[in-house]
Length: 305
Image (cartoon, rainbow, N blue to C red; front, side, top):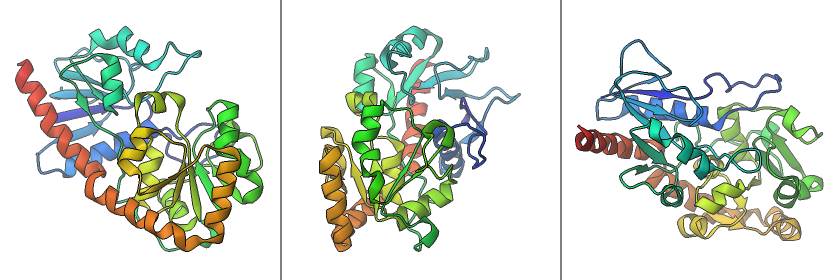
């Protein structure tokens, strides 16, 4: 089977101070390509359009231009399109769905909201060859760390991240989006993994639409795969899947209290780190996901031809 993956970005994974965001969809797309090409299912995968017509083209954004060829076209609805700047993720999906032959969703909840039947569900996962336990890197050892771009509502950013700014917080991401002294700039995936292994606490917060549709963000998988200790916002689905791997918080003073406790009692983080790493290695690497994807695509192709 020949697969092309079309990502809206293919050059964002750099640490240059260029004012641009690192794009999570590119991280996921490159992990898919690498894992599919290593799979036992004889899948040949490219990132971007090629001259040769593939069997399947997977589009990582509903905004990408659809190539007019005979390939089986699949939309992976892994981005969110929140109101009021966008129509909404589900609304965006319904506007473009007729262009595709089938769909992949990052959660069962989003699939249900999109009202599709025979589509696939593939959660995010970890590239365990990059995100793995590392020796302590003293230049990346912080009390608290957060990696990501600053595009949440300001009150959410304050509630789950910036309220710890006087406790030893370090932020890595696009300095232009953060525009504060806490941001140390963009970070490579390998250094990001070392950051998670080395920091005492790794903070996580989801986008509102991720919480509403039951999607777990990529950061959760990367932190746990690196042997990091996570304090995160809460969802019932996240607690059901990772309840023994994550400490949950309601933010503000609750977050500060929990940070203080685990900073004073670092040995208490070890059961969470160990459980999280085992959970990822057992069930949540891109190897697991791509095995499911290649088998799922074969079934979709068989039922539509």
